[in-house]
Length: 285
Ligand SMILES: [Zn+2]
Image 1: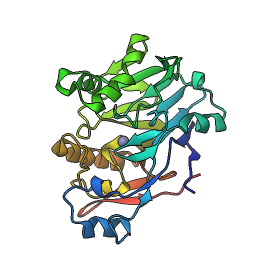
Image 2: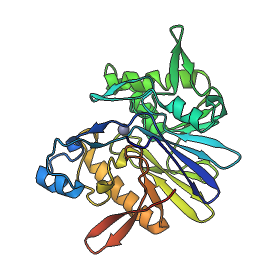
Image 3: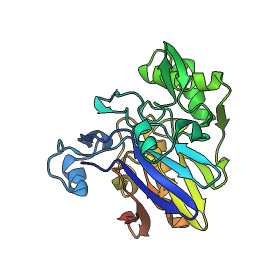
Image 4: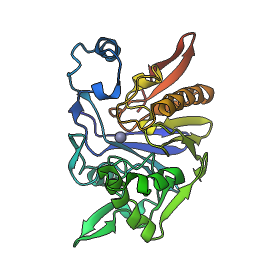
């Protein structure tokens, strides 16, 4: 059974990695245009169709004054790109004693359906906010893209709108630009490519740093191979640049690194070597 919850601390921040579903799946689509023999070797498998652990992950950060949720999973049980998931986040929160109403801040890496799914649920046919007391932070570029005429009629835009427009209507949507400070110790790191306004987050506490990548990396191997482009990335050149930027930043801050699609609990550090970067797993908790 995959691990569905793990907690660890970063300085004075208590962090819980919480899964909204942890199916196994083949990862080939995340290494577009790369010879199967090359990426399978990097992942330690031989068959490209071999399922490996995957995760629809979120992170809950608590520092005693704030309760911040990074991404909100897939929402009601469903599928995205035919991968089943969802339906579990509220159970995971209950298991660690957190009620939805206690979450005061939600921050999004982007507005794909597996990252904002729990923002709204339906009650008697009308959308209701799952986290009624939360301010919800999304990069302005991301929100404007998914609400633009350019993507009208697409399923992805419909899902992004379904989970953000009711938040806006309730006056709880907070749009930010660039490297904004979302809350004390939580800084936005623009990492466009996967989506136009994709954002990673740097969490800092007492001299320690944690980089939450979002979908700038679907697997730690993306820190070693910036040009292994996920087929879903909207702008491959930008996504490659964003991985280079994240790798350099992770080294500069000596940050722990994790991502929502990495199996729980995946933490690592990125090291600079002559040929580029290497990922080193770190045990914690
Ligand atoms: Zn995703």
